Length: 297
Ligand code: NAD
Image (cartoon, rainbow, N blue to C red; front, side, top):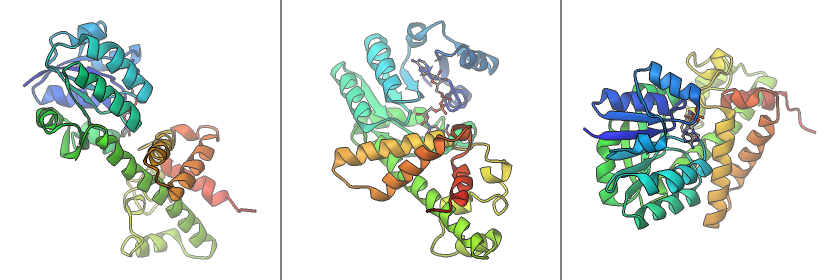
């Protein structure tokens, strides 16, 4: 069992830190938000007085931060200069590939093993300890990270060199965003032409159009009782996060020299949806309401 510094105790980080403690690790937590620190303390966590205190004696540092700039700032500005020699660095945030690679190179130059280990499974998976981790880094760093990640997840996959965890994550989410948009269009079109959404669901969920955006996250209220659409689009996975990941995917496509036109269209659709009042905080499947109302030219 290890002494772990956990930085970023938000919607995902708090339950992940809690599961590491439950797995027997000694976890010290830090977040710039006083509300997040209060929630961590209320959950029985050992709240550090600052980032430096959090890092003291750490054998592993795990971060769950919003975006690439936070990861550059936290790892580049605080963790790499101050973490104990030999500590394993693990970034679980979903960020751009370039930031992930830049921070990993900085860590390597300072003698640290580091992995990018973004997750899929959302807040529910974080709470249940069933996350999937996509892990980029050397074989040695992956071997060291596995026992830490096992405290928070069920499926742990080594994707290759530093940054490839982020690549796998945004490929997945480009598929999710694109299929969600076209599922919304199909259900809206079907209903306008006289096919009841439940009937369409029964057919498509067992036909070649079947996908996660239908069987787990059906955007039309009713057919899937546990989907966000059936609880007034409370997230789940917010539209803001979907839009962020689709933008990251476009950036990655550009840097790879790969045209990703379907992903680009989905990205533009979610960005447009975010312009509506309150949309950012709704589940991403709430884009169904906008698409269904869109009559075209
Ligand atoms: P969140 O905003 O709830 O939590 C992020 C936390 O980081 C906040 O509490 C914030 O105060 C803290 N933070 C920001 N800058 C900091 C700094 N300099 N030092 C310390 N703490 C700092 O976000 P979240 O939902 O927990 O998501 C975190 C990451 O996980 C994101 O990259 C997101 O894309 C990814 N993700 C989220 C989900 C989901 O369903 N929520 C699913 C998969 C992946």
